[in-house]
Length: 205
Image (cartoon, rainbow, N blue to C red; front, side):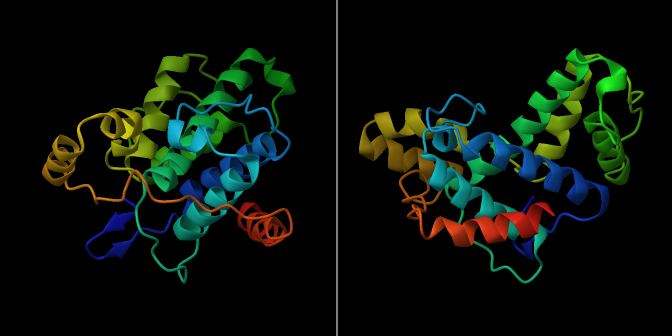
């Protein structure tokens, strides 16, 4: 989990390498996507404008990769941003499998996943040339779950549509902060987003 009672978790080693690659990839996807054509199965994130998405990616990337970064308050948008990064990994594996083997750059996404899973102690890993997408999705989900221990952020629309009293009771039952779903996402101007770019370039290497 990236947020624990003892503080936040920092990604290290092969897991950090995979995350940095995915962060750089999703930034490229988002950068010029004014029409929102790229979707990452993360509604609170997918519905944002490009500048907002970049700001969210910079915030979660800093939190997971930088020891000195303060622990941000959990919101559906921030956690959806993390979920989107792992969905980008799944998308890249799918695209990689569709390519000819000789067209894939080294290390491949599947090699990065295997290395990260090995460091996490996951056994019975597939060959890095396996084309079984279901098998890779299970591994990506496992890595994502080690950071996001639940998927409360997926219930964003459902809980916003219920009766407020019932919604508050359900959030209290699930241990969800009152403003988890309604917290205002960052919204940098075109000038302010230059600072976001600096952060993202440093994070993605």
